[in-house]
Amino acid sequence: MSLFVLSIGFGLITASILAIASVGFTLQFGVTNILNLAYGDVMTGAAFIAYLVTRAGGSLWAALLAGAITGSLASYVLNRFLYTPFVRHGTRLFGMIIVTISVSLVLQNGLQAIFGASFFSLVLPRTASYGFAGMIFTGQQLLIMGIAVVAMAVVHSLLSYTRLGRAMRATAADPELARGCGVATDRVVGVAWLMSGALCGIAGVTLVMNVTSFSSTTGGSFLIPVVAAAVLGGVGHPYGAMIGALVIGLASEVSAAFVNPAYKEVVAFGVLVVVLLVRPQGIFAEIATQKEVVA
Amino acid sequence: MSTAMQFYVSNLLVYLGVDVMACLGLNLQFGVAGIVNFAFIIFQAAGAYTAAVLTLGSSSAGGGFQSYIGGARLPFPVPFLAAAVVGGLLSLLVGLVALRKLRTDYQAMVMLVISLIATTVATNATGLVNGSNGLATIPKPLQSVLGLSLVGYQWVYVAITFAFCALVWVGVHRITSSPLGRTLRAVRDNEAAAGALGKNVTVLRLVAFVTGGAIAGLSGAILVQFISAWSPGSWLFPESFVYFAALIVGGSGNNVGAAVGALLVPVAFLESTRYIPQFGYPGLVDALQWVVVGLLTLTVMWFRPKGVFPERPGRFARRAQVP
Image 1 (cartoon, helix red, strand yellow):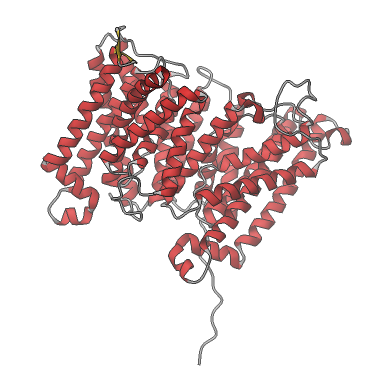
Image 2 (image 1 turned 30 degrees about the horizontal axis):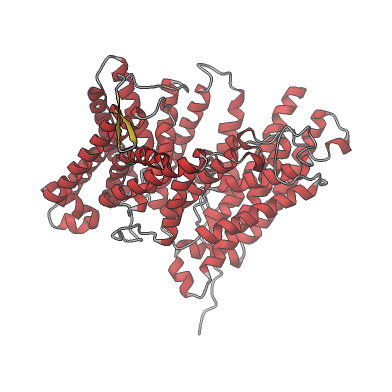
């Protein structure tokens, strides 16, 4: 039983990181309908910048900020100067997948070429452990969960209570109509990528905060659970992504406690495949199944 | 040619044959039928493992240093054919589950995930195909029977590869140039219209998928019997992407394009550069190679989205004038 409770604790941490990442991923997809498979590698890039900051003596907060800025700018540049031109050039759904995979290859191997094929870890102060109802967390893990909660609250209030959030939802639902109603969709898309990029960067830093070491492939291999969480909740739907993250995070960590931990990702992926086959639109049905990419 | 040169050239030719076969198989699935099979490499791997297990003999024979399911020592063409059958059967299984009505990008995700699950299972279930170490000391077909020198045998293997390659080419060409091929293209271009004309979309897709899978299995078998070793590390997801890159560069939907793509991407970029002197730390050249493959794909996607040899538009015989 205690093993079960303990694994729920691990699951909550994984779910927190997943939630930050998959909400960012799903925002990009919701607004532009581009399945950005280079997302994981942007996460890795942010993690490397955070690593450089901590090695230079910067605090964890400085590292998080640097990671968020890196992710934000990198995502904006990718969309503005690569994805959007390709879509305007006439590249469709499948073509965009190939484009984003190519970008992923370039980023991942570019990072490997720069930093080398070895393992790195953030230089972090040691913190005490806290026990809570049979679960054990380090100070940093509590911080990760705190960041996730704050990030979710910010995303929620932005989407629900601001003009920008309304414009974003309008653009996601029907870009033509939104443009017709006077929404500057170009700017909205730009802001959406800046924002989701910041989430991507923060997710990258929190991901490597929680592991002992990372390499140029860390973000890329974390991408599939991220996509799984986003798709589970219905791609383009931020609240769905939060719930999806919780399900995938808990399912993978709790199953790791009872079956061979090597298979924990198989469990997460299995959930994704089953959901896609049974309910392709995700838990929250909102996105039409025939939507095309928009620029 | 010096002996070393002969080894080099014959190696490349075998790789070329294998990659051309694989690209033809994937072209049938993706280029002609429009199935985004990001799990392509696992069908090649399934064929490779089948051929390996069917030539290695029983698991305890080689001192029992590697464990795997089954184990037999079958004569030359049988393991290859069995590999094709297994590739096809596995495709049938995956196809029945995954070839539902899904958006292209979701289907691609399902295939990608299937590929990752397969890698994880094969790596961790050691009893299946020896886990992450993979299988080694796989015997080469006819080597003991022919009694040739090592170089001589290399050329025999080139001949075997090319023979199978020609067979695959003829088979695929007959499909793509037949009414079946046209129907598959119709399903790819407009599923609803093809369905409305009474074509069974699911069965048609399945036919292309299973045929492509069988070809993938065969290509894997030929590769594994040549290099005599195979482990999960050599069939990770990026390997599938290499074949996709080849099709995109060469021209998907066009068999000549697929073959040229196989020559340009996997062979020219990833195999021949193996002999460039290494510089920097170990792994730097590999990383840069992948960067180049990514950039090459992006460039082609921008400037020639239909590839070097685009699919030829359909030609129709002039109709007789209706009076």
